Image (tube, rainbow, N blue to C red):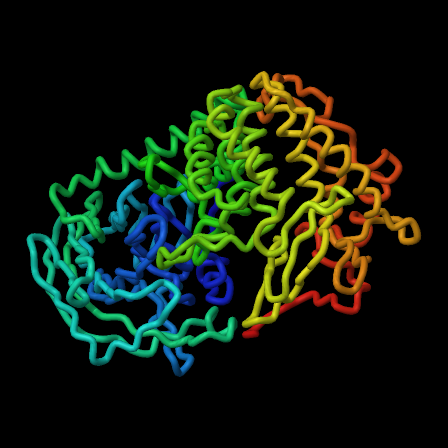
Length: 593
């Protein structure tokens, strides 16, 4: 089933403004918005360029205000909400249909007896967005006018631009914009029609989502040019917004490249799953295509073709934990282990004191290492990669670094992270958020979890057994890692709370053991991982049921954990982070801190 919406969704502002679309360029840049055309976030834009890939994301082109003249009538196809709350114009009323065609969002506008189709896509590996308008039906010509609204700001911020004088220069088929001295110039050109430069600030756009989030909801954008063309049925006009100087405007080739990219992604998946295109469910194909949006370029010394994973759009960069958790799904399950290798090698460049970075700051400063579990997920990502590829060359490259990680944990590293005498990892300091539950407001760590978190120690156990297996594969002794793993397994029994019938969430915290029922204990059942390096995990072959080592708990306790989690935490949307009967439980959060 295609992802599509008709007039029942598109023609209703309350629903149309809640559906958002996203296209990406494989280097951290993106375009996104609502299907209604309303800009509701700071992050909405037609060209948000990654000026220092994959970060330094900068809003350059906000949107195109479309207006058509047909049969003597004027129709505004765009929609805007202003600071006084009014919505004018209401172009969403002309949207006949919205369809996601592969990775390309597509709108069909109906006015009179005419149909105009709009497609938006980005060039892979460039900060370039294409917006193509095609007249599909009509009893006469359509006059199309497109106002280009530009900006030049960090995608997290807003603009008050009344006194900001940008330099807008006419070039062949469009304009080049230089926001200020030293700014990256960007270009807006068309493959036809006429272009008239402008310099008019439109002030007071209201951003509904930012208002809900408790953030400045006002924004201004600069009308930089107007493109005009007359279209007959079968004709098209394409606007190209880019940081690359235009050379040839071969739009047909550009859309073919994007379609080819999509088919390549699906082809890898078909091969990995032994499927034909006819056998593949459309919704799974859509997930495969969406997975690629998170894989982006990150060039590092020694790895010019390095890659990383964006933790989420629109505002996240690449985070160590998120990358390693997602990598098996993004790369292995989609049949693209070749992209996992450069990601694993890229992150190896950032190993420091036995840790991986939690995040890479947007402005390119020194990476932040405030995470205890990212490095442990790294072991699991390498294990899954090897289970499919049998790439012992990568193991040879990384093994000494991984062994150093174990040593750092034994002797202690940042944030009081260390292996305790009971075989368990202790982590935490005041004002430091180290686990996945890392919300922090000012100096307030919402869920500090200082002590010995259960999922961290399940991951540690899995990492030790993984190292023992890697040692076997490389012909070196893994006895040390197996001995450490057994010590951890024995110490892990302390997590079991016999009175409550499930596990403590954290041991040896400032207030003792934490009996809060959280989903973290499910990792005590999930790990250790299957020892399936011979079987081809994630592809259609028999999978060994043998584990890397002994389970952390006997079957009865594992079943009790699963039952408690299912009974108290499972919802239609996933697992709650805390049982509803806990005094700290809050089912909904909104607004500012």
